[in-house]
Amino acid sequence: MPILLRETRVADENSEQTPESTVLYIRQGDTKDGFAEVTIAPDGTNAEAVFYPPSPGGSFLTYPLVAQRLQDGGITVGVLHEAIQDAILKANSTHAPVKGVTIAKSTPPVTEIPEHFVIRKDLLERKPEIDPDAARVDWHAISSFSIVKMRDPIARRIPMVPGVPGSNIYGSEMPFPVRKMPEFSAGDNVVEHEKGLFAGKSGRLSINNKGVVTIEDVLLLKKGVDFTTGNITFPGDIILQGKIADGFKVYAGGSIVSSEVVDVTDIVCKKDMIVQAGIEGKKIGAVRVGGNLTAKYIQNCRVAVRGDINVTGSIIQSRVYTMGTIRMGDTGKIVGCECIVIGGVQALDIGNSRGSKTYLRCGTDFTVQQELDVANEQLKQIAVNIQKAEEAFKENPTAELERYIAELTTRRDEINARIPSYLPKIDTNDSAFVEVRGTIYPGTEIEICHVPHTITKPQKQVVFRLDKSRGMIVSEPYKK
Image 1: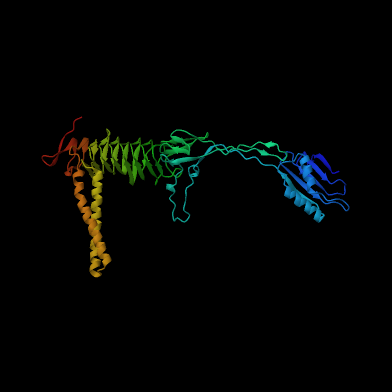
Image 2: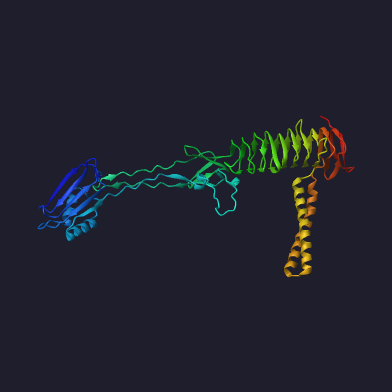
């Protein structure tokens, strides 16, 4: 009668065998017979066997016996019958032990993955894409902020993957684990949808340490703008508490408020711009404001504003354009500037005693004037190109040159036809004025609706207006 021996083996400290593993011995009957030594993992996840051939005169180990004894030992799940048969055949045919044969394996549980959101990789990492073959990398253009537009996707919703319990080789259930996923939730200005998280408005993406995703419509730059921030392009309001380093650009879809001196390379502000200190452009800087501009002073800068300009101090060596009015403070001076204004100019002093050239053009829509100036420049360039092409055509008349001259001529005629439409739109306010509370100095030229007037001697507390009936600019005493 075949016998089944079972023992529990506890390994010593130096043994690699799992503590408290169970060992089954399966033998035909006689000690000379072939047998199997089966080691079962303590948690019942697998069983591994060594198959021994019989000694001379003994009987071969058979598969049915092994299968029956495993079942008698409670091993009913995940039995690898083919592996057992192959190992028995090999041991009996080669008369050598076959070791390390896995004869039963548990069915592992399937991990449950809860429903979760996966944030767009580019929004989390913010790693700039740099072309290694580029001759020059513009480090100013590399931003550390994640800016999204309204309705932009922020995160994908990943549905839950249900867990499935496993089973050990004894048939006992093995509970499934639950994977812990990063938790994100919708905060301010973020919309939760069945497909994921979406931007409810344009702004800066922010994720706090609790995983709450928000869109900030105000960007606070405590250290200003430099290589740590890159150029700034933000759809909302920007608050600057530091300086703008040389060469960096700022674009705001809302307003800009700054507590520091603003060193301008290129600033675009769709709404109001308020600078508690001054604006400096180093002659090449440009500021474009869609609303009103308020500053302590403006120096060496090009400024274009759709609203009013309010400056408490001075405007010096700058080109200033506004569709509103320039209002200077109690000590406000305009010196060495070109100003094109639809409304009026109010200042303490204009020009200086050294005769600095100051040009004030009032009642004029600078946007139309700029279009006219561009058209005139284009006409000049086209005239030069036509002359060169005609001279070349005389020496070598080709069909290609003939077509080129025809194209230039057509372009010239189109611009000439468009120019008359600008003229009625340029001078839009014949009520424009220049108000001087202090002194206006020689070297200053005033123009109201294309009627010029040159200041030849200092004048104090005076207001200049257009007298349409006489076609000239007249002055009158300034009254508080």
